[in-house]
Image 1 (cartoon, rainbow, N blue to C red):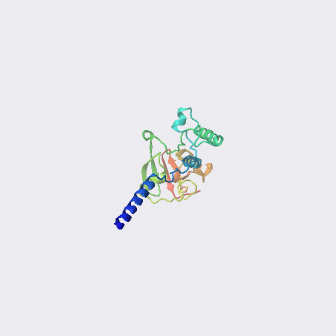
Image 2 (image 1 turned 45 degrees about the horizontal axis):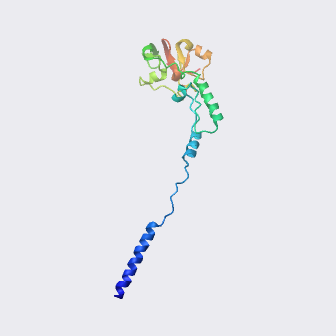
Image 3 (image 1 turned 120 degrees about the vertical axis):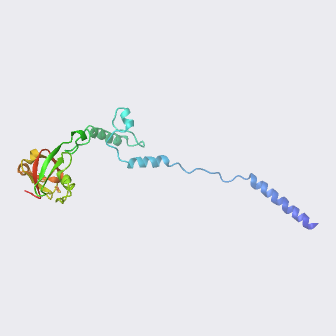
Length: 198
Ligand code: FES
């Protein structure tokens, strides 16, 4: 009998404990501080301004002065104005090779050392068109800033080719027929001797 009384008391104690625990309030959960705004602001500062107006800006008259992330409006406005200025510079620069498909012209060019006459298009550098024939033509920079690809045409190169930003030949050398084939676009018929420099 004594045993069952002890068991009863333990049972009551456990029940009371469970009830007390049930009604006890735990530590309330509190959300950590919201940093998302600050993070977005910092990210916005690291993203460079674009030089072109965003579609959203265009709808309000162009300019590109969208206040990204709030503060420092003065700086952003200044950059926006700059963007507007560069927009005014017009379309992307076009070179002598930017010729519409339906306006491409072909010229007969005699490649003296290669022993062939081929038709060359006016929208592609002479070097590229020679290489397309499988010829091993000299070159180095392929951007008009050395003379490795130099060649000589039988006339005034100022009339017979158009150079795309060559930086090595002067007017007299071109009058003598020298060209840089990597950036020379044909503008007439001629014969050309490759591997010739002034
Ligand atoms: S390869 Fe250098 S100028 Fe043509």
